[in-house]
Image 1 (cartoon, rainbow, N blue to C red):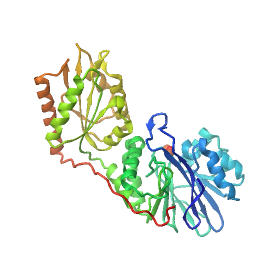
Image 2: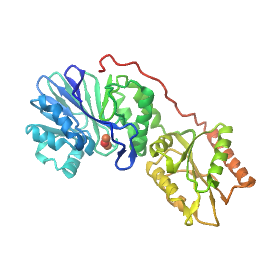
Image 3: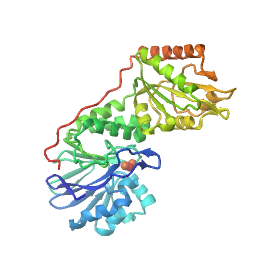
Image 4: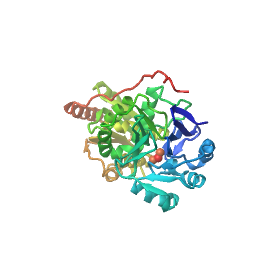
Length: 408
Ligand code: FEO
């Protein structure tokens, strides 16, 4: 794709990765992604904001063919999908300097062997003038690495935010048009990499609240020309309080656990508790991660295999522990053949979860009427905890945004 004009002397560059389906060999990308770079031309100096993932460097280099001079290259974040093409860009422009935080410099030297003498280190709130355009660098650590920062272009009120506010969507739209679609993709991205750091991300949001932002240009997905939409979404996602929602990931081998899941979901629903159930062997873990942004309770369903939880359920427990979700309550349900230590093994796997454990419901073989009654008691306990804390329903988004006048 050719460079696309956003505003006078500001262009989108980068690559749309329509085919990518996995990130970090872990995170599903059902809609592909993009690696956005931006070119800003001042009266005196020209700057490139971020680069692209190395397999797509030829696309960025082609786009730069008509750019005779580059003074600066901003690296917001050292991860390869944004900084991996820095060495190639520096080779093309021997005079260009990399603008980065001190922490980012260390990482770029370690990971990409960027020469030490090519850097211009900037402090938090430092500014650089391009001539008629002023860049202000704002440190926003842990979005989602420790070195991350964003850039505010004062005269145009544009925030270049890298991963912050990004979404994995491959599309020909330059600006956000379908907010419902972007909401889900951005929430998935937040869940997968930022959820564990939400307390510091809340502080970063607070820091940005003093800036007059008319546009947010992330380095994945489309540009927000109505930034209130994504800022409001993030303010909700970083809240400490969870929602009236149960995340119920499960696996079942011979349907006994599945029968228990179905009965429990029905009982929870009758009591006004929302549930998202995930049959793990066929689940997109990104969807489960989205639910973990909101869920007040996690209930894991697993049969007993080799005296412990099914390995697929153990993997889900590992993921939940790593994401450190907001959940306040946890329980385990499932069926066993003759014995085992499923509850003990799973309990040891989730030290990061600060949860009250509600009585697990395990049954031998097929669940009988007494087992089903115990599941109803579990539903009562969940419902009463959610009611006691007045947990609200999750925010739903389903709306579209009229096309932007300059989108093309
Ligand atoms: Fe899009 Fe953390 O890189």
